[in-house]
Length: 368
Ligand code: 3HC
Picture 1 (tube, rainbow, N blue to C red):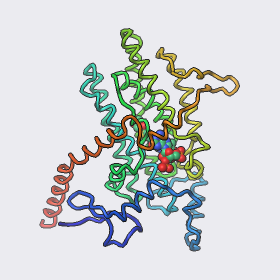
Picture 2 (picture 1 turned 90 degrees about the vertical axis):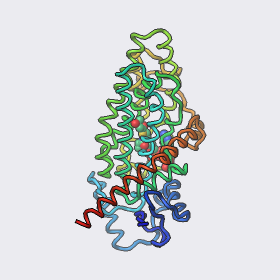
Picture 3 (picture 1 turned 180 degrees about the horizontal axis):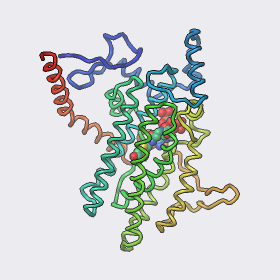
Picture 4 (picture 1 turned 30 degrees about the vertical axis):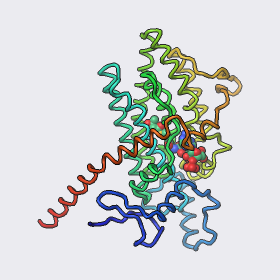
């Protein structure tokens, strides 16, 4: 059996590293622990920086900082500080996992879409999310970690994905509401990432954002049809869905700026262009107006235009709920992870077959 070594950088001696055997990850527990630690407990900049660095490293870092300051892009082949690499890997892999796990709540409704048109739209949307996950895994792989490693960290419950996908989709109106609010929040957060300093991530985000705009519009359209032409029961269903998704959507932007451990460094490196709170506020301002067009009420008695700030004020967010969900104890965390692990296990024969086919092609070429 031929073994393929995983491209894990600088961890253990080669003989002790994890390998892929027949398309499956054969894990070295010690190495995996080191890897997931890097993903999970991302050391912050000052802790991460090596106490003693060579003159060459100092010079490389000076050039890197100058590039960032000049607003230039960093490509995969360029030198980068190890913490920049790990920060990107953390964010891009979390983002990729979010796209893939995000297929589940909507996928549940493909067989129950009310019309052929809505089914076709939903199918296209869920496929798009799968595609986004793949672009993002590919972007993350340019940083030297394999897709199998990232997926393994997800399945082991060690990698994060967006809190929003741990909430259930109880009615058809939830699907429109996900499009309008969840994809709306995703676009607000992701458009600035098109200018991220890491070029492979920025390039992936340009295409993703175009597709997310369609996702948001189809959701709004679906709700508008129900609110304008629907029965009182259908309108009540839309309002109920909006009531349940509103607060979790505000949490999508991450903790408040003063409690966000990664923000300062992310902003300094141009990975993050706009802060969590600023994006959240922009989302509230845009959505409050759209809600009026739809004829739904946002479930916040404190939501009010503030002419002095020229923004909407809004009520307090339940951050205890956010951290509970991020920590694995949301309404659907276990179900979502179990569905992903099952899909991975069920797909093992496809990966094995693809590898066997690839090997045959290589043998044929070598023989020719
Ligand atoms: N869900 C789960 N974890 C979250 C979170 C959320 N909504 N918001 C923040 N966190 C986590 C962070 O990942 C970080 O954890 P870590 O340090 O252990 O990795 C911790 O909470 C502290 O948050 P920070 O604000 O310090 O973290 P960041 O600076 O990385 O900012 C972020 C968080 C704004 C989500 C940023 O990572 C980001 O912009 N990521 C890219 C976009 C993304 O991943 N979006 C997910 C949704 S994708 C989507 O919605 C699909 C679409 O099709 C609908």
